[in-house]
Length: 261
Image 1 (cartoon, rainbow, N blue to C red):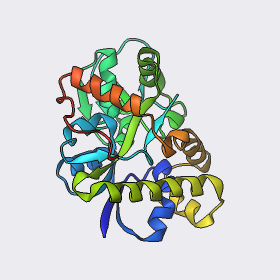
Image 2 (image 1 turned 45 degrees about the horizontal axis):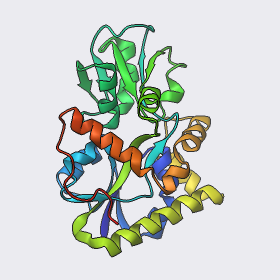
Image 3 (image 1 turned 135 degrees about the horizontal axis):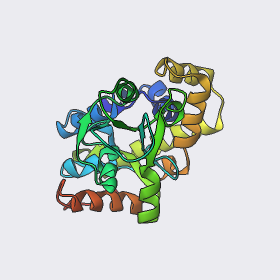
Image 4 (image 1 turned 120 degrees about the horizontal axis):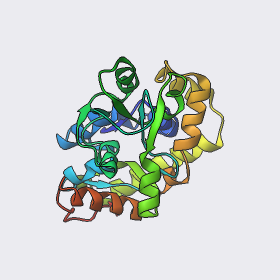
């Protein structure tokens, strides 16, 4: 049985529920930066990774077209207790996340990596001056008294003229093209099923892994991040992000084809 790593965030548990329920894969739920590192170690056959991290695993993994997180208005944001210039260290949700790479658009290099769900509290307590929020953070920061300093996704979209490619599904190259096509088809079918059919079991599964989120936040999260690109990601946007990472000196441009087929 192939292993499949996804995040416990509502967009993944919603979109992948049918895949999980069908029981064809050994499913691992983990934080996105942890999944990035698992991919570097080659631990998982199929895994959700930050697009920015793909350059580190391109030798062994190729990307699928379904199951990713790409879109307009979905990019990470920088928040602080006060709006204005960033005056100190910035918390990031992992050094290999797309959020960390996008922070370079602001010229920020003094960063502190931590789990994405710890960042808001770290800013509020003064452990860091500001933080880069991903996932549901864009829906909760105002209620906690934080202010948006910068929308990194907007900077990307205005500068690159394409949607923000946050995450994608990587599959081991050794599994071959036929398996990659089959997995892609199954993920695409799962996404479409989730968007087109009410499912109490699915909703309970999503809520179970998002226990600290209010139902309206879960719904907003899914509506924003599960979109047309989740069925078929924007290849040009992915290539742009990898070129940006290469230009920042993070890795060489992948020598092999980025996509599995």
